[in-house]
Length: 349
Image (spheres, rainbow, N blue to C red):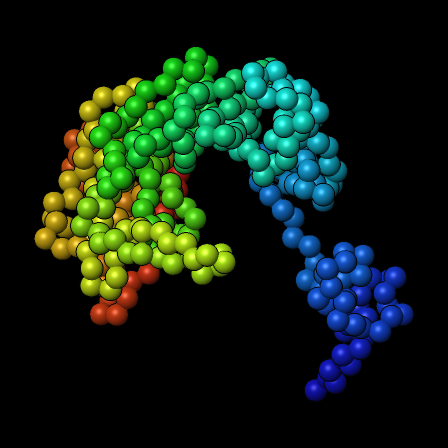
């Protein structure tokens, strides 16, 4: 049996050359000074995203810009010029150059799928910049807050939720239309409530709608909060305690009611998928996705106790639903995310 290396040798191997003659201190392990602290686990690239089979994007070491990286060599070049981006944005009314410079950090915006346009949500409005032409535009100009903004897969539209209703705006023309029209404080379209974001789709993820791959339709959840009882939350951090009243189901209280609808991107009537077989029980729609050909909405339903899970396929034209698989357990069934689709139309799950 080989003897284990002494701890000092292991530490020395992990330390950079400049530090190998130093004693290991708390500052090496827990310190805040980047010149002293040793990253024993290495540094993970931040904001990494593949552009194509040979290039990917990652944030620069200082986090101020995105870099285009040649995967085979590691050679990097800036993916965009922050100075030029700021100048283009500063041409918009009401936005000066100093403000625009703060918008150029990678964490301040999102790209469309082709990385040709950048999208900002600032001061309750949406702004877009075409990186190829250098032209910026303000997409919305409304006092109400826009949230959950997303590019359509083809980049032609930006969708968002305003006043609990689902909207979209055409990037080229700025023409806007509402896809639903009766949202309220108790009726959410395309936006998750506290229970669904915290307990189902993940903390901080309030997005409750999904574009079809061909950009022709949007599937979305409709949540009715009226059965959910109000709960008072006390904020103990301020000197003077603050309170907030929110809809929150204690154990045994009703959850929000849920439906899954599909609406054309051009507007029109909503087609509700047939989930009537679940109506006698309090069910959860825990995952929504599309098949790659945009012909089916693939979604998952569970009972509140989560002892079973159905994987279903819904027809966005007729609303008919087919059950593909059911998982059952006397204890608990964990949802596994969306299917992984193969080229022949089958999937792994």
